[in-house]
Length: 206
Length: 206
DNA sequence: AGGCTAGGGACACCCGGTGCCAGCGGCAAT
DNA sequence: ATTGCCGCTGGCACCGGGTGTCCCTAGCCT
Image 1 (cartoon, each protein chain N blue to C red):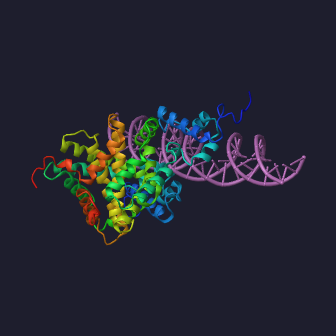
Image 2 (cartoon, each protein chain N blue to C red):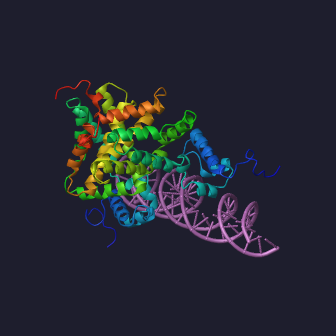
Image 3 (cartoon, rainbow over the protein chains, first blue to last red):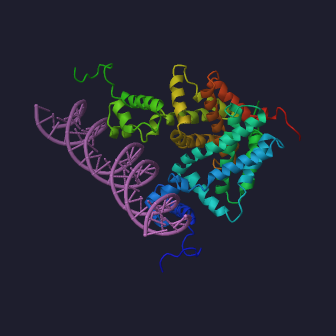
């Protein structure tokens, strides 16, 4: 047999290495837990060396996030493109919904990723670093819309709490399978935008 | 000279070891950055061995957080004690304000801690694990008040977004020194409770 | 053929974290 | 006072994530 090149079927077409690592990592992490898998094992399953793993991903956690930077960039583009045609919160909600509009074929993979990220403590911790980029993008948009600086309380607050809403929507989507991602996101943002009106169903005194 | 015991002044009274480690870690991390300091250095400055450090703190990051578990427990107690005498959001806000009501003598230390936690990526990541406990406590309170389960969307959403508000208030407090912690917290919670009304100062159409 | 470059493997090293064992001091019972 | 237990500590060896360095190989260009 020997190495077959350019067949496009037998071995990986040179770029598939990254994808192979992702698959190996995702599968192993899901089956045995993030901490229960060493990078040597991921590398072995992916058919590469440990050193090569770190040429494709900077950390052990990074294999779980696809090219998240592209998502952040797309979110930023969506917000800038929206401009001021909608109220601020509605624009952010629409952008979050749009950027998370996966085809149904991709949903299982997304589920697997989010399940890991929200379940494994080490990945949950790592997520904070990733989300900081999202928050910066949203805060800049809010600052632009309100004529404030991105470091002030209001832009930062809108960014962090809308991102909390999005994350919680993902949680709910994972927990309750009949909850579509779209619906979970809209519900969470609606609660936010109304100041959690559903808490006041039976306001006591006041 | 030799070892002086029970003087209460010269060397540490046996319990001060933990405090000495905290001080050493905080000072070193502040001066040279979290990643730029090894635990051996912290241990050396604290006058103990590396192995003993890990008997007092489970991880490198833990030395930065005092006994955070006590804060969480106090927050839980405050919420349970409040019962349903206030609207849900107001109760959570009051509890956050109360649990963060430091004496002015303690503010510099708090500043140092929060500055590290919010600035150093590794500590920011670690914070997510700590905050998960806070979120659980708040979600349980909301569930109790609304007759829902702590895992449902609304309790989780209220917990994560109020915690986002509290964290953002800390950020603002650090950034703008004239902003008192109390005022920052109340401002953030007020924005949340009103659905970010100040975003609508000039609603375009609709 | 010679030379360039990019991708990958082998190795050594640093550092955070853990398990294990040994020492040492206090303290109680005898 | 001797014995034995116990809590704190240090020393050591080990694992695993992450990094820097060197070398090898495959290709490709001229």
